[in-house]
Structures are given as C-alpha cells and as structure tokens.
Image (cartoon, rainbow over all chains, first blue to last red):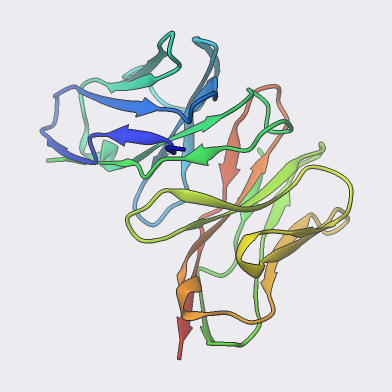
Length: 115
Length: 114
C-alpha cells in the first residue's frame, strides 16, 4: 500500500509569494495533519483536518490555511511568504482524529526555500 | 505550557553497544507518548508508542521504551545498535486534548560508528 504522498518534494519561492503544498493520505485514513519542521528543530503542529473539517490549529499566523477534500487529500496554503517560512513541511495521516485510536503516519515532506 | 525535553542533542556510540536516548515531558494530565525516527531527507517513521497499560513498550528494529509517570520520562533504549540506526530520533507527546496534536522534542542525533 502507498504511504502518505506529498508534492512537490522541493520548491523555491520569493518573499511575498504564495505557495500551495499537497498531500494524499494513506488509503482509508480520514485525518490529515500538517507540521512545519525548521532545520535543527522538531516538527511543530500547524493543522489537523478530519472529515473535511478543521479539528485543531497550532500557533501559526493567518497566512497559513488549509483544507481537506472529499477524497481526504489536503492542501496547505501559505500567503505572503517570509524567509522564516523556509522549512520542511510534513503531512501526516491517521485513521481517526484521536491519538488514542491510531498514530500518525508521515510523508517525506516538501522542502520549501524562501529567498 | 506542555513541553518535551530531549537533553542530548547528539549521542555517539560504537556499533553493537547499548544506547539510551532520554526524553522528559511536562504535563498535568494523562498523555500518549511516541518515539519517531527520521532518516536523512525523509519523513518520520513511528518506532513505538505508549497509550496505556504496560509501562515497557517494544517497538520496531529492536527498540524499546519505558514510561515512568513519577519521573515524567519515556526513555528509548536498544541493547545493541547497528550502523543503520544512525538517524535523528524524536520523542513526542499527545496531550489528549480531543484532537490529534503532537508536541515534539528537539531531537537526538544518534551517531553509530564501527
């Protein structure tokens, strides 16, 4: 079975631009979460979506938004990019919205570089 | 605020030696605990998890961890490491808030040499 797939794998943007990252969960998984991993740090929670609804949001500005589609895939959008947005963006899927039921399965991430 | 502390940023060890990676967390409520491994240019792979029950948890690749509620720790151990275990290891806590949010530590880089 395919794991969590993310696209693109790498991209370079300029400050002020907008970017869209995409994620396809493991088949049968209804929850998708997004994490930002800055170089040398642990991942930080951005969003969780379950059944197309936002279930949780981390401490990120409104420039960050996301959505989940009927097929459970998801997009993360970041507007007005800043240099500090340069990071590895990880998508993770799980069967359920609760950690007690199923753990997160991570994709290989999208490496975003803002110049 | 809840937090996860991984005191060792880097742990060098020789092949076939035992290793312990330390993790402490702060929380006043019950939590779920996880260890993930990250190889270069890859995402995170789940090693093991503690949800409830036995405090000694066994995971993949010969790793195990012990949950100690009184010391709020969840240290990862392996009795004999291999070169292929060289990677970044992250401890994470799910605060059981009603949605699935992991709080990660800053990671420990395990360097296994021959």
